[in-house]
Each structure stands twice: as C-alpha cells, then as structure tokens.
Length: 468
Ligand code: FAD
Image 1: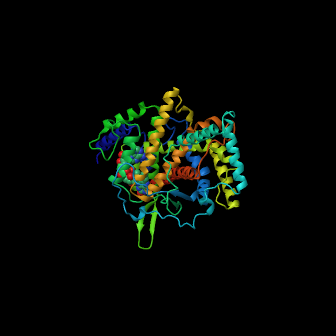
Image 2: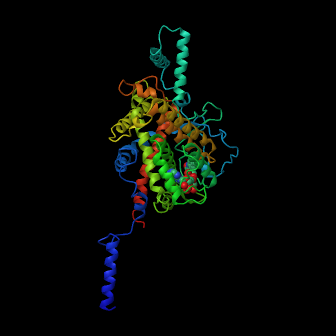
C-alpha cells in the first residue's frame, strides 16, 4: 500500500475516533453493561441508590435470611391451591411435571405449627389474652354496658380485617395443605405463552389504574405497537400520583423478580437419572438486556429494587411487634424457637440500621378524604391481584405467586396500618396490631425471594462480564 493511501486511512480513522467521541479505541460494550448500566445510581421516588442496596443485601442480609428461612417455622406454609379461579371458567392446569407441588404428609409438620398457637402454656395464653383485652378496652368508655363494650371489640376485629391488602386464603378449608417450601422451590417450570401472558395482562390492564387507551410497551397480547405507545405509557406513568406509580412499580418489580428466579434456576439438562438446574444467560438477556428489550429490561430491574426497598421498610417498622416478650416463633421445640427468635431480631435490627430507608409518609398524605379514597382503591386493587393468583394454571407458580402477593400485602398492611402508625415505634409495641403466622411466614419468605433476586443479579453481572 502506497504512503498516500496509508495517510488517507489514518485520517479517516482519526475522524471516526473523534466523531464517536473516543480518543482511543474502546472495547465493545459487554452484555453485562447492556443489562446493568442503567441499573445504577439513584432510584426514582426514593433517596436510595442501587449500589448501597447491593452491598447491604448481598453481604449482610442475604446469608442470615437464608438461614432463618430454612427453619421449621418458616419452611412450612399452609395454602389452598385448589380454589377455583373467580374471574373465568377455563382453568386448565398445564400438567407439566415441573409445575407439580408436593404437599406435606400430616406427620411431617411439627404439631406446634399445626396447633396454630404461639404459646407454651395455657397460663401464658390467658395472660396475653387478658393484656390484649385490657388494652382494647382501655380505648372504650368504661361507663358503657358490657354488651356495648363487646360490640366495640367486634368493631376492632372488623378494623383489623379492613387493614388487610390481601384476600385471606381459606386455610381452614379441608383442601388447604401444608407445603414444604424448601422441597418445592421457585424455579423454571415451563409455564409460558398465552396462558401466562393472560394473567400478567389482567394484572396490569385491569388492576394497575391504567386506562385501556394507554398501551403497555411490548405487550405480547396487543398487536402493532411502536415507539409512540411506549412514550405515551411513560408520560402517563410520570403524570400519575406517587401512590399509583408505586403500585405499578411494585407489580412490575414482582414480575421481574419471578423472571430473575426462573432464569437463575433454569432446567439446563435432563437425563432419566437427574435434572441439572442453573443460570441460563440467554433467558436472562432476553428479558433484561437493554437492547433486546428496547430499554424495558433495565427499567424492570429498577422496579425490583423499588419493591426491595418497600419490603425492607415494612420489616424495619414492624420490629417492635416481634420484640414483644410474648412473641414466639412457636413450633414446640423451645430451644430452637428461642434461637430462631434471636436470629430474627438480629436480622430486623440489621434492617433497621439501613441508612436510606424509603419514606412511606409521602404516601396518602394529601387531603384526608382523597387520601382515604386512594388508600381504599390501592387496597382493593391489590386484593384483586391476590385473587387472580387462583387463576394461575401452574401449581408451583400459583404457590409462589400466592405467597409473594400475600407477603407484599402484609408489607403494605404494616406500612399503612393506622394502628401501627399511631402506636409504634415511639410509644412501644401495641397489642392492637396483629400478624398471623401465615402473614409472618409469607412476609419473610417474600422478602427472601426479592433478596435472592438482588443477589442473583450480582451473579448474572459476573457471568455476563466477558460476553459481548
Ligand atoms: P412474561 O414474563 O410472560 O411477560 C409478559 C409481558 O409483560 C412481556 O412480553 C412484557 O411486555 C411485559 N413484562 C415482562 N416483564 C415485565 C416487568 N417486570 N414489568 C413490566 N412488564 C413486564 N414461570 C416459571 O418458570 N416459574 C415460575 O415460578 C413462574 N411463576 C409465575 C407466577 C405468576 C403469578 C405468573 C403469572 C407467571 C409465572 N411464571 C413462572 C411465568 C413467567 O412469569 C412468564 O410469564 C413466562 O416465562 C413467559 O415469559 P415471557 O418472556 O413471554 O413474558
């Protein structure tokens, strides 16, 4: 090649480098950057950043939480997977082997759990009941007749149920069974296509405050979408009040978390002897790569962090309830139960020490009447979502879908319960606020799932580091 050509190529190269903004040759973008480069820094509507959450979760919380969730108290969850779908008739179960759930034999579950009691003796039982009664009656005018006082107590019970964000599962039904969560892990099941899309679609289209005219980006059940729909969707979302925006982001975060799990525990290989489960990088990229998902993937991952912060805040707020001396993680094994309570409190104190908690006081804070209506709407929409879980056509997905919505519903109950706001933490734990064992088990397991997702993101980041 003559000197003239060499000079020309050199010049063109220099112009390209300058015009592309690079003084020196840059390595091509890695797959990790395409999934994660926008998932960093501050999260919308919060004062917290992703890196602080990663460090806190992956090294301080995750290992201890896993240990707690392996204990008997947390591994057995009672659920009715046979409730009919309340919204449509066709409920064809997918019939896949990986969708099956193996319920516990009755002798597997410790008696202490089945007896639904928190206490070790009848005396302790009576004492606590007396305390609770006294505290409730304290708020009732003592000059009222005994009958009226009883009626007021009934109202207190009613108030309790109106705090709930979830439709209570009918665990007293003969069809409800205990399931060992460790033996039925959330992972890839093969439940996908129109049946799964229909569930997500109903959740987003009918329960996320969205008018039908606004289209969700990349919705597989809506045809002919373009960039303009995406722009309309995000300007609609930004125009919403903070509560409704938060609602969408919580659901999207839950959806992202489920999809991270199925990508992290994917069926990689199957022989007649064994199945091999592990990380499926392609599956993860298809769902979260910024280019492959036209920017949607990183947004979904940010919503997952938002969900993490909401549940984290609820756990820090409910600490005084678990600190009550009479509260036990009762299974009947006294030493084990005490150790578990210590571990649980250690975890909750750690959570309380997190420096950048979400501030829920910005929610439902405006005009009292409007705020009340908004909270009611929020609650009803969420209850509806918990009912839709009975329409999921794969038992394993239904189990974990129910557990995670109940867990998130419990977190919302904690964050927005008037009783908790009025009494805690300043004036100490109140006996008016209650969580059932089901609520406790779902709250911690649901948070355990989100915490695992955050940890899995670190694993995927490492796996994608050297892929272009
Ligand atoms: P889907 O995940 O079905 O999503 C449908 C559409 O919603 C996407 O095309 C996209 O436009 C949009 N979307 C996707 N993610 C988000 C997000 N985070 N935020 C906003 N919009 C989004 N499968 C398993 O293998 N194991 C399970 O345990 C499991 N549990 C499930 C639990 C429930 C309640 C449901 C409804 C489904 C569950 N699935 C499970 C199925 C799984 O979630 C997917 O539906 C399935 O893998 C098909 O994925 P997809 O890529 O087609 O899109």
